[in-house]
Length: 325
Image 1 (cartoon, rainbow, N blue to C red):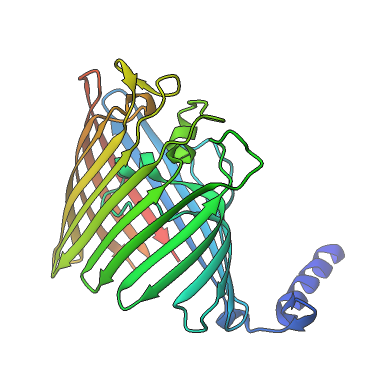
Image 2 (spheres, rainbow, N blue to C red):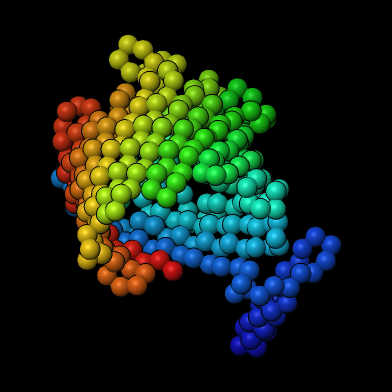
């Protein structure tokens, strides 16, 4: 009992004093300089051949403003349908090089800015399943007058020399209050999480680049989302399709309407080409209804019908309860 009280006292003292920075000690108000957020998503799913209840997402984020030029973000993540255990998902240090936030330097583990993956559905779009990439990287970001862009580099697994930082990418965009257009490029799409999850064994494979195009437009209660991902051709020995190497594409076209009673309805058409090796659907039709039931708590219901590359169909009904703070 005394040991527990001692540990609690030490922990409280550390919070009160602040944190050690560089060669000195900088005290800060934890309420003003450090913020925490969290998300829990629980889902019940009923498909053509199975049903399950899962804690789909547990996410805890910490954002710290060290000083006027330095900030840091850490996100811990658990996804029950993933092989990864609860652990660090994002850990980034950001430096404000301009002093105004226009020019930023980021270093750490992050989701590199390839693709946008916006959606009002419960399930992730097929574009995300192909293009999402989490790596330890270095990034420079710039933003001015609605124009934004970034350059980044990292040391991926799909390279002939794994001791050299030589994978790279960029994104360019234009954003206004109701419009966001984005173009992105990456030199090695084989480093995307979806390829790793499919167990394709692309370590030391040749680089295969990819581009992403996306647009999000809103007008009153209507939001329209369009995104397209396309890879260059893979070597047939790595990912084959029919009589050659695969050139994988993914499309998401979505329309959402926000009703006046805090209810949003959304419908989407998604499709892939030459992506059967990733275990993805060839096409998907999905509809979702979501609403806020209490402050910080939301309820969503989604129905999706997938068509596989072997022409078989499957349907899934998902009910999601989410809470964020």
